[in-house]
Image (cartoon, rainbow, N blue to C red; front, top):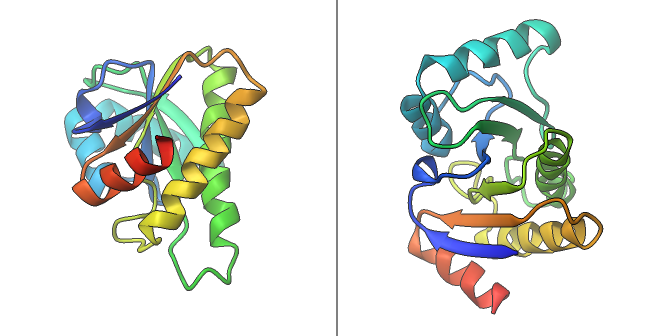
Length: 169
């Protein structure tokens, strides 16, 4: 079941929240910074271990860590594409963020997961297109996988909330 809420992703009691991370996995601004601040140093420690092992996280890929002090159990970090006009595979890369996050969730026995609006902040992905990609990709994934019980789209701003509400109606 897909649910839409407006609020703070870091306060949700779900199995996993998804972080709109950067390739370094070392924290940043926006959602990434909020998750690292609220979750504490345990998240950063695991991100550093992942970096040491594989050198970070590529755009469209996803990795999983503890959630530290967050009410969730895990954080799935995915790196969204920076919008450069849509001619560099940005839509496919964004869809991969959702697909790979959901795949990791299933592989780790996660049944409830919450997504932010990946790439729509400083990465400038157009919000209407990002909402359509997110919703379509999640719907396609859950049509073939019944282990996920609840998937939340968590919108921080009014514009994204309105876009998702309209598309999910």
